[in-house]
Length: 59
Image 1 (cartoon, rainbow, N blue to C red):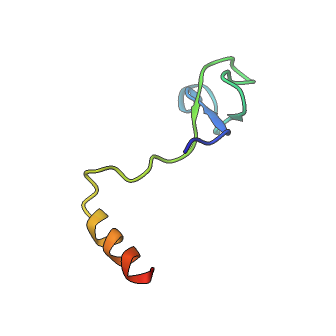
Image 2: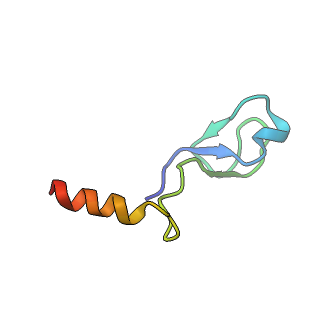
Image 3: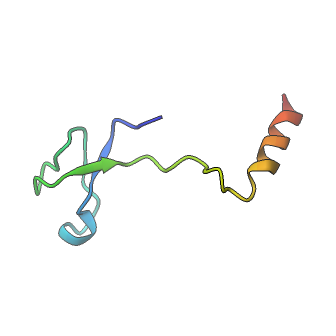
């Protein structure tokens, strides 16, 4: 699932704070933007088995 809100890819080098946008370009520096949503749990997640087991118990 992707978020519509994007953050400037260069904000750590160019800006003193994160700059958010809805488009593909940063409104302040015209640099590229990237998805601001955190990555989902990966298959190498060491606690994934425990989370799935706990979720099955509550259902």
